[in-house]
Image (cartoon, rainbow, N blue to C red; front, side, top):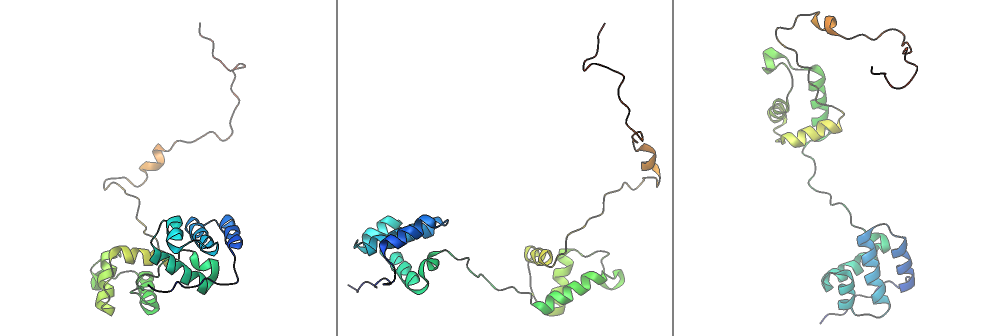
Length: 183
C-alpha cells in the first residue's frame, strides 16, 4: 500500500470550508469540502465518498491543490486540437474573399464554403471541414450574405405601386368615447 500524499500545510479545514462557501463553482466546492474532511483527519476513502469519486481522483485533487491551491480545483476547458489554418492561410483566405471570384478562372460567381475548401486544398493542401471553415470565417468577422429572393418575372417598379403609405400627420379620431354606438 502506498503512502498518502500530504496536503499543504498553509491551509486548514476551516479555511477550505470558507473558500467552499465563497465559491461559485459547484465542482470546486465539492472538492474543497472533500479536502477539508482530510484536514479534519478523515480517511481518503471517506473524502472520496464526500466528493462522490474514487480514491484515485481524490489523490489527483490533492496533487492539483498542492500545486495551485484552491484555483487548481477548478475545471479548465481542454485545449483541444490546434487549428489547421494558420495566420498565413487566414490572410490568403481574407484576400481571396475580398477580391471575389473570377467566373472565368474560378468557375463560380460567388464564394461558397465548398469552393473555399477546395481553394484551400489546391493552394495549401489543407483539408478543413465546412463547419470548421464556417467557424473560422465567423471569427474573421465574415458573415454569410444572401440576396433577397426576387421573382424572375418581376417588373422593376411594381413594388413601389403596391407600397402602403401613411398620412403625413396623424389626425385625432372624431369619436369622443372609447366605444362605438350600435343602433
